[in-house]
Image 1 (cartoon, helix red, strand yellow):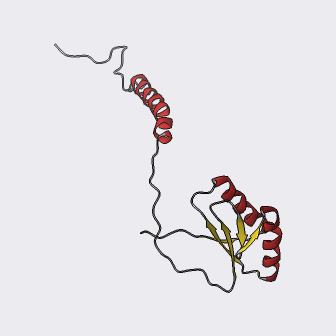
Image 2: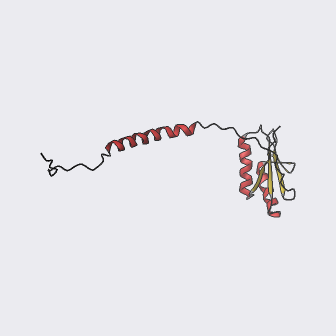
Image 3: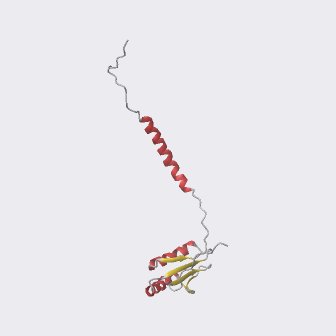
Length: 135
């Protein structure tokens, strides 16, 4: 008895990809659902700073905000409205002007952001944020 392989049916040589597609879609849905959950709960500890070399004193303007929220430019009390004008005058005299920004850690973040926005609007690109070293 001989086997005859010349029938009307040929051997199937294709892979059924339907189960593979189903698994990939399930994995895609799981990834889409879990990805936002991972990014919402990121907790960080901000680093403490170490001492660095101070900025050169020849092209320096010092802007300070004390604990009461009063702004000073080079140790002279000034309002936030006059700060931009005064800094623009200093920048016109010295194109290498660097602003050293000292802010008390108890002040409102909004006030510090306003002062930094004024510094940026004037066109000053060199800004040093002063911090306290590790104790």
